[in-house]
Length: 349
Image 1 (tube, rainbow, N blue to C red):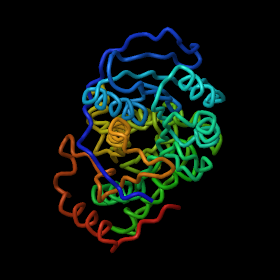
Image 2 (image 1 turned 180 degrees about the horizontal axis):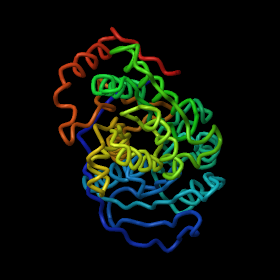
Image 3 (image 1 turned 135 degrees about the vertical axis):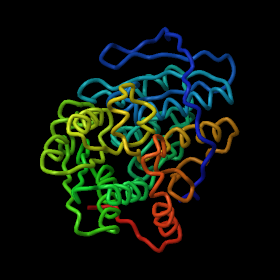
């Protein structure tokens, strides 16, 4: 496995887009191209929720746009249909249209990306949250992986240090091994500070039902149950459903912890912004930007995973709003213990 690496923080400004002639259907979310006569033609296949989720997918967009700003080029963006049955078609469409590299966002592509990559051996593929081993180890695929459990451990420490009721919660979007890493790290962080704190953990949808990543109404209902039961801080790893968690926090006068992006900066409603204590940053933007840079420079090895962790600043906590300024010393201590191997963070609950 490759040594973890990290680049500078990706720019968050998105370039304007031009419509592509070969557009996807409405169910696929459409296809757009960002102008650039030189540089790579980048294909981006989104996860559930597509662009505008203010979280996981948007972080990938930010990485692509930062790479285009540095290297030039253009991007085509496609989203899966409602039942996520056309993921292979999206990758194939991008390949047939001449896009290279092609980046798939989300672990759900693992079932199809290996076969597509083998069909197009001259095209370079990458998958966010997908290991090459899970896709059959094609030589032209790179896995962009993260130590979500490490960043979530710090989120748990923050929750434990800030709770006033000794009761916190975790809301997962879909019950999968990946999201269970968030849960496991969060619970371990809480317990490291105070094992007596009660932790409620619940998922919006079961494995195989990806609607849990794009259902704010259901996310709100799950979180409301936790706040009503006495939790005062809830951490979500639920993609677009996280807005519902923030809404529940605001109405319950509780607090919440965001995920993937600095959600204090991405929400538009000041009432929601006020309840976001911190966010567990998963630097998909950095990973995507770095991968495209490697492609431009001809340095993509292929057939390997790149892992982004606390040591490489691939995960961490946001500080926007100043809500965790008073506990930074404690957070830094736990972070260093993880980096030094003194704390072994679990990956399963």
